[in-house]
Length: 151
Image (cartoon, rainbow, N blue to C red; front, side, top):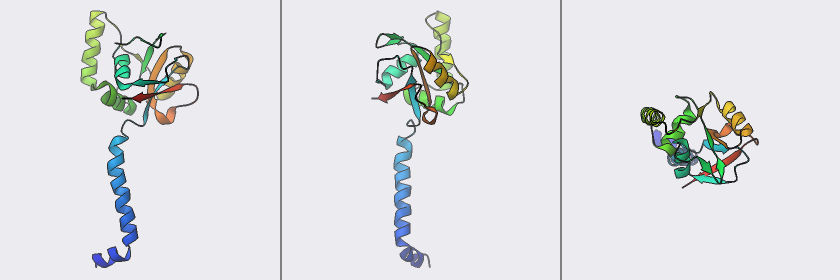
């Protein structure tokens, strides 16, 4: 009986299999695609590498293209934060907390400025020269510049 149904609906089965195959291949690749690094429009750079972004959010890079940077962060538990730190910074929450504890205790720096939401990050980045942040890509508007992360 199933064979008859499959033969009768062969085109639909093929389309369904193609859709499933595309989802399986594309879903993992797009894990970071929905998080965007944004900057104040006064920053001259058009893009940054993942290595540069990692250094910025770990406080190791303090300027970009001659502009002093002010990074923004989202709170623990935020989906964009989880994706960003996993994909770019390569640290989980526990390691990140330990890292910043060492840096702050030694007087070598302080963590990025914390905001409650994407909207707060966008507003602050738009109004603060040198500000950079990361947000869910659906939150982006034309008040900020999107820095494409390249390898």
